[in-house]
Amino acid sequence: MIPRYSRPDMVAIWEPESKFQIWFEIEAHATDALAELGVVPKEAAEAIWAKGKFDVARIDEIEREVKHDVIAFLTNVAENVGDEARFMHQGMTSSDVLDTCLAVQLARASDILLADIDALLAAIKKRALEHKFTPTIGRSHGIHGEPVTFGLKLAQAYAEFERNRERLVAARKEIATCAISGAVGTFANIDPKVEEHVAAKLGLEVEPVSTQVIPRDRHAQFFATLGVIASSVERLSVEVRHLQRTEVLEAEEYFSPGQKGSSAMPHKRNPILTENLTGLARMVRTYAVPAMENVALWHERDISHSSVERMIGPDATITLDFALGRLTGVMEKLLIYPERMQKNLDRMGGLVHSQRVLLALTQAGISREDSYRIVQRNAMKVWESDGEIALLDLLKADADVTAKLSDEELEERFNLDYHFKHVDTIFERVFGE
Image (cartoon, rainbow, N blue to C red):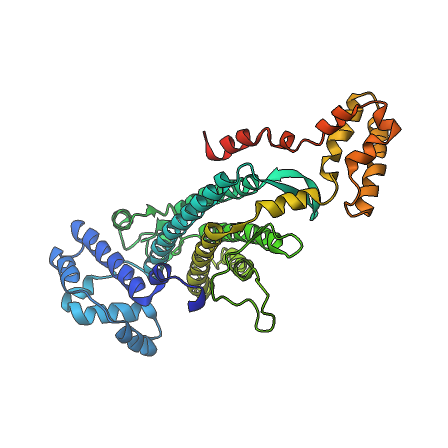
């Protein structure tokens, strides 16, 4: 966790105070259930809630001696509760506490990330509606293809993040399970009803079968989902970076008064936020691999996953939270230049309309191969002139073309609005009516 790329609400989930509070609630709820079953005195359960407290520094001090974090925690709580503390942790094992706590933390982190995605979706939708019919060039391989609208570019991003939201909802459900099953997961020393009680109190589902640990395929799916979301962050960020290039300059990050882009070149306005997001996305994706490698534990458990999750749990969620928040800000303040988009559309002498001419010639009776050859020989002259020659003019002077198409028919094939006749349909599919 790096403070530069952190936001307080997500950081708070992973603070020691928050973790130990969840540990305490797991232990206290479990003791309540044991009391209801008559395994421990009800007075003991009441005492734990009434007198139970902990001190992070004291836990750390004890752990330095006992070399076991859960024992250190239980020892510190017992120092405050007194004799009734002997009824805590009855029939439980450390993983019952650790895994259930991690499930709570990841579920809470998911809720923040879902709110982040909602905010991003709202920002993208607003800009998409604003530029629903703003003409711009669609590119393939970085080369001019055919006209699109800037709103359609953003509609694609909206649909992608809607899918990511659905993925995260599923991943949250997958990760939010509780295991209070004791050593090697057999419930030999603790009734399954205790697990059911703790799960209900913490908003989790019961883990159907745990092996002393919650199966790590759940965690693998969760962190893989975060990696997919990060890839979508990068995809939209890279689009902004390309659009901000000097040769394109169809959109750019907001440049605030007093901001400086370069220590050496005073004229620079660099896409630093989206470049930063590209880097952060790389980091979030890297956390998916160790999560997958954690799936294969020895027999009923080992702790090879533990050190990994102590790192990737906070780092992945904190980093993605920051990235989603930053991307939302980029989209809200994105500077968009329709005039430059139109200029770029026009700069290649009408080449973007070549397919319509090709199709018109085939419909007029010329084979596709010959139609392609006729249009391409004229298009290449325009390409080599860097748009100084107009494709329409060359076509009107080509006898093979004019033998089949009139000037009026050719001019109609250069109508920009033709490309946008289904924009409403696409928007209805993405945003609804």
